[in-house]
Image 1 (cartoon, rainbow, N blue to C red):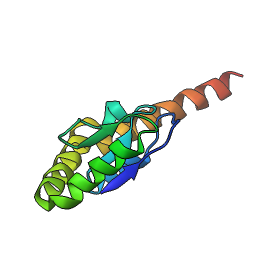
Image 2: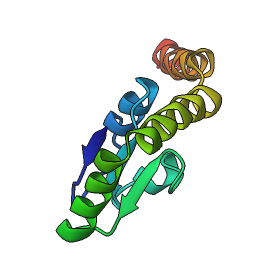
Image 3: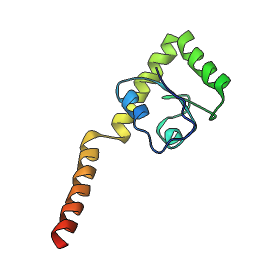
Image 4: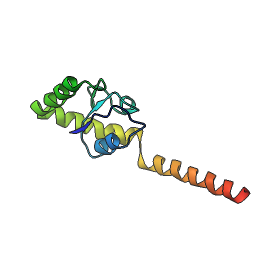
Length: 106
């Protein structure tokens, strides 16, 4: 189980890294977390700054190891489907190629 309670966040890779490790995620509704996590399937999203909701979501997973395991397995499958390594590597390569091309021109 990975818990990400920030109040402000840009994109934030740590929830994706946790999901890629097969961990369910409980996160605040900050940055892009809600776009990464499928509510109730790969983890839980709670309102920013709502400590009671955060604690309740964590406690629910700790009280139900089977639900935690299912969410972790779903998280891993979701990351593999939505963020495959080959695609991510190709995107990074395209960025570098654009940078090199711009440097050559100028």
